[in-house]
Length: 291
View (cartoon, rainbow, N blue to C red):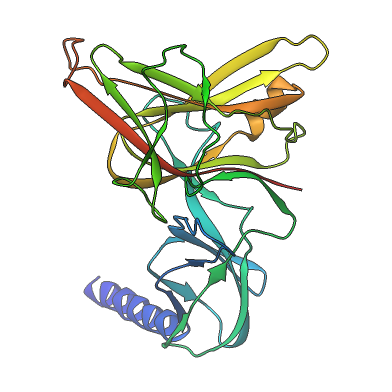
C-alpha cells in the first residue's frame, strides 16, 4: 500500500514538473488607452486572452498568463472593464466583468519559451467603426446638461475647478436639505441604434450615488418616456463607469434620446438626511456606439 501511494506521488510529481516545463508565461502590467484629443479616460482592469485563436481566459491586470505553447505565438488581448448593464440584476450589485468591444483588441506575435515570461504592452483606442455621439468634458465655456427635469432652479450642473478628472474643469451638482434632489438631462435628443448595436454611456464621477438613464421621444406622437435604470454607488475617489444601454434602447424602440442624470441627498438608517449638504462631481460624460 505504501509503495502504491509512493508510486502515485512520484508520477504526480513528475507530471506536474512536465506541465510546468511545458508552460510559457505572458506578463501584462497595464492596458494603455489612447484618445486623440482630451478626455483620455478609461479603466481597463482585465485582459481577455487568445493564443493562436485558442481562448486562454480572462485575467485581472496586472497578470501572468500561462500558455501551453512555445515558439512564435499570435496573442490577441481584448480589453476588459467592469460594466453596469442588463445583468446587474440586484440594486447595489453594480458591475460585472465584460469585454469592451468598442475598444480595439491588441494583436501581437511573440516568441515564447517554456518556463520563461515574456512581457507585452497592450495599447487600445476606440474602434474606427465606432461613433462618439457626444463628449462632455466641461472644458468649454458652456456644457450640455442644462435641461432641468426637476424644475428647481436651485439645483443644476455647474462648472468646478476643484473637482475634475481630466483637464482643468469638471461638473458638479451641490445639494442641501432644502434642495435635496437634482435631475438633469442633455439639452439635445440624439439618434442612436435600437437594433442591439453595442451602445454605452461612459462617465467619471465622485461623491453621491448617481442614477443614469434615458429620456426617449417618439417623433410621431411627441410622447416622452423616462427610464432611469442604472444606479452608481457613492464613491470617495474618481470612478470610471461603463453603462451598457444596448438592451434598454432595443426594448424602447423610440426615435431619439436624451441622457438623464439624477442624484439626491444621502439618508441614514433612520431615513433622515445623513448630512447638511452633499455633492456629486462628474467628468468625461460620453455616449458611444459601434457602427
